[in-house]
Amino acid sequence: MRGIGAEDVRVGIRTGDTSQRERAAMLRNPPDILITTPESLYLMLTSRAKEMLSGVEAVIVDEIHAVAHSKRGSHLALTLERLEAHVRANAPAPNNAPGRHGHAHEIQRIGLSATQNPLEEIGRYLVGPRREVTIIDAGARKQLDLRIEVPVESMAEPGASTAPVPNGTPTAPRQTAGPQPIP
Image (cartoon, rainbow, N blue to C red; front, side, top):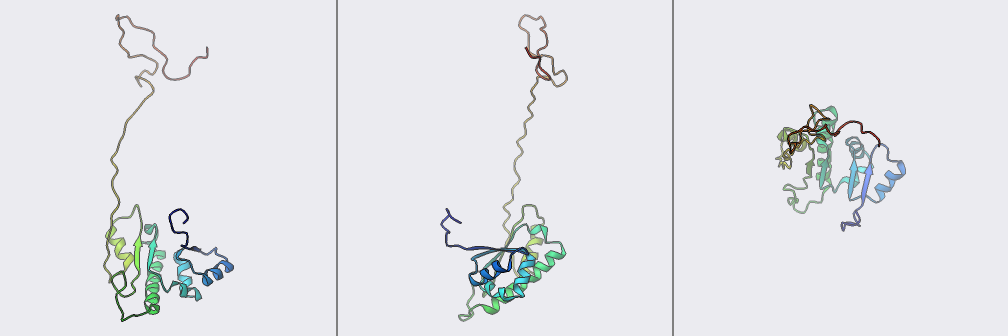
């Protein structure tokens, strides 16, 4: 994160390949940003690692279309609900004041996908049935800019010249495509 003014932000990665030593180090010094898989998030919520998730403010699900309509996506939806319950149960309650996302200690859920439709259905999947979703459709159709360029004047007769002749007498076809003789 050097170069963007975020040198003090710690990023951690937790997957099935994360070693026991790395997991223990992450518990001692939790990252500010955690990159993980749905399966590893589930395992973290069932272990001592769930304590480092108590202060989660936002979850970003990248490539949400890859899991939304599958068993893996169902598992992720349940895991996100468990994470929400864990954060709510472990958050300090100063008069149960609303958090910065509207409700007391509600996690902001962000889904990213360049190819998913209908967006409303994916949004409902991400936030659950009893929450409102805000959809930002940043997708835009790119205007097609198509031009066909060919290296010869006539594709019907690649070796013939279609250039007008000044005095009306035909000239020998000029070689514009195909093998060229070596002088």
